[in-house]
Image (cartoon, rainbow, N blue to C red; front, top):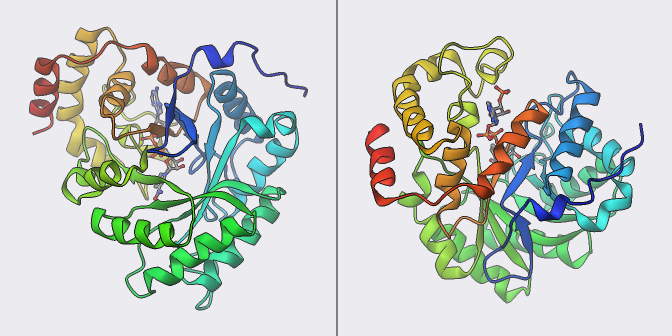
Length: 329
Ligand SMILES: NC(=O)c1ccc[n+]([C@@H]2O[C@H](COP(=O)([O-])OP(=O)(O)OC[C@H]3O[C@@H](n4cnc5c(N)ncnc54)[C@H](OP(=O)(O)O)[C@@H]3O)[C@@H](O)[C@H]2O)c1
C-alpha cells in the first residue's frame, strides 16, 4: 500500500515548545503502548499512524517493553517507519524508553548505565533506525545513583543515538536533581512524561508540575483520558472491544464501575460545552501552560480524528472548572 501524507496536515494542529528548549511537539501525540503488539492487526497499526500523521501528529511514543510481546511495538512501528513513513523521517519525533523489566538477569531493569545503553541499542535495532529523537529513563530507580543514570542518558545523546533526553514518572524533587546533573553534562533534557488527568492529579502534589515550570522543562501528559474512562466509551456499558474488557491488567471492569458516576457527571459538562467527553478531558489538561502536550492512545483511527479536535475547543470558564472539580470529588 502506498501512502502520501495529507498536504494540509500542519494547518489542523498546534505545536508547543518543550519548556525553554528548541523542540516543538504537537498538542496531541500518539502513544503505542496498546494496539501495536504481536497479536494486533498490522493494517490497523498503519491506519492509526497514517491517520495521526494526516492530522498533524508528528510525535510517536514507544518504550522498549511495549507489546505484548515486549519489543513488538518497536518492531511493528519500525516496519511502518522504514516503509510508508520513511520519506517523512525528518518530520517525525520518535521517542523510546528504558527503565522497566525488559530481559532476565540483573542488567535488564531499572536505571544502570549497563541496562540503559544496551536497551537503547536493542530499541534501535528493532526500530531499524540510527537514532531516536527522545530517549527517556522510564521510572525513578532508588538504588542506582542519579549520576549514573543521567550519565547514561548523556552518553546516549553524545553518541548520536538520541537527540534529546527525557525523564518519565519522576517526582519534582528528583527531577530537579537530575536536571542539575544533566545541565552539568551539557545534555539536552527537554521533556518529562507523567500521568495526569481530571481523575489523577498526582503531579500537582508530588512537585513535578511546579518543578517542570521552574526548571523550564516540558511535560507530555500520558493517559490523559485515564485509559479511556474519560470518554463516551463506558457511559452506557462496557463494550466487548474496549480496553477494560480486553486488557484487564491496567484497566478493568472494577475500575470502570468505581468511576462511572464521576464519568456520567463529567459527561453532562462536556454535553453542555457541545463536545465529547474525550475532547473536554484533553482540553482540561492542555489549558494548563505547564503541559506541553497530551499523549493519547487509540484503538481506532476515528478516535484520533475526534481527539485532535481538542485544539479547536473553547477555553473553560471558572465555573466549568469548578463544576469539573466538583464532579470528581
Ligand atoms: N511513561 C509511562 O510510564 C507511560 C505509562 C502509560 C502510558 N504511556 C504513554 O502514553 C500513551 C497513552 O496512554 P493511554 O493509552 O493510557 O492513553 P489514554 O489516551 O488515556 O487512553 C487511550 C485509550 O482510550 C480509548 N480512547 C481514546 N480516544 C477515545 C475516544 N475518542 N473515544 C472513546 N475511547 C477512546 C481507547 O481505548 P479502547 O481500547 O477502549 O478503544 C484508547 O486506547 C501510551 O501509548 C504510552 O505511549 C506512558
